Length: 277
Ligand SMILES: Nc1ncnc2c1ncn2[C@@H]1O[C@H](COP(=O)(O)OP(=O)(O)O)[C@@H](O)[C@H]1O
Ligand SMILES: [Mg+2]
Image (cartoon, rainbow, N blue to C red):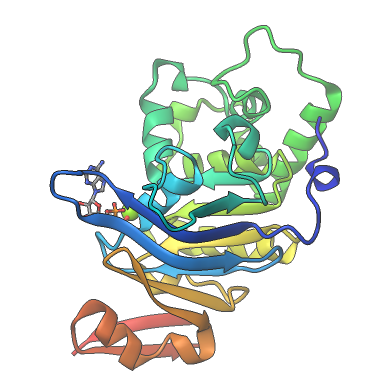
C-alpha cells in the first residue's frame, strides 16, 4: 500500500489554477469555467458554492482531467499537487473524488453488484470488484478500519446494489478514504439523500476533516457547509465571483447578487440556511 503522505511535499498546494478556462462548444464559444486564479493550500477546507449551471461540475472535470483547459496565449496553470500530468487512477490515491455521477456510473455498471468490502478493496486497483489482484492484509485492515470510522461496519458483506443511496454514498467515501488521501473532493454530496441521511453525511464529513483529511466541497446547498470549512469560493457563470473567509464572504448581500434574487442568509447553531424573500 502506498503511503502518499511520503510522496507529497507539505508545501505543495492542493490546487493552483491560473487563466484556466473550459469551453465545451467552440462554435458557441461560451466558457463554462473561466478562472483567473485560484489557489488552495494544503490543510484548507473550502466550499465552492454556486447556483446550478455556474460551472462547478465543469471545474471538477478539470481537476479530474476529464476535460482540459482552453490553451490561450497567456500562461495557463492547472496544477494539482504541483503537477499538470495526472492520470486519474494515480490522482485518486491523493485526492478522493465523490460525485453523484460516479455513484450512478458505479451502481449502474454490471460490475456494481459486489459487496461493500470488495468495493473498498477494489479501489486500491481502480477496478470494480476483485479479480486477480493481490489483496494484502494491510489493505484488508485499512478497509475494515475505514468501515468502522464511517459507522458502516454492518454493511461489509452487503451488496452495493442492495443498500440505500445514502449507504452507497458512504461506501464510496470509504473506497476513497481507504487510500488515506490528502484531500477529499465532493460534488453535491447530499444530493438525493433524505434529511436524516444528509445530516449523517455532514457529521461524517466533519469527522473526516477533524481527522486531518482536507475537504473541498462543491455544492449549491448552504446546509452542506460544515463548521470546519472556513473559506468560501462563490462561482457565478463560471467565474470566481468572491473568494474569502466564510465569516465575511458568505453574506446576504453576496448571496443575493450571486443568485440574482432577494436572499436572506440565516446563520444557525447547526450551520447556514437561506430564505428567498
Ligand atoms: N458536456 C457538456 N457539454 C456542453 N455544455 C455543458 C456540458 N456540461 C455542462 N455544460 C454547460 O456548462 C455550464 C456549467 O455546467 P455545470 O458545470 O454542470 O454547472 P453546475 O455543476 O454548477 O451546475 C452550463 O451552462 C452547462 O449547460
Ligand atoms: Mg454540478
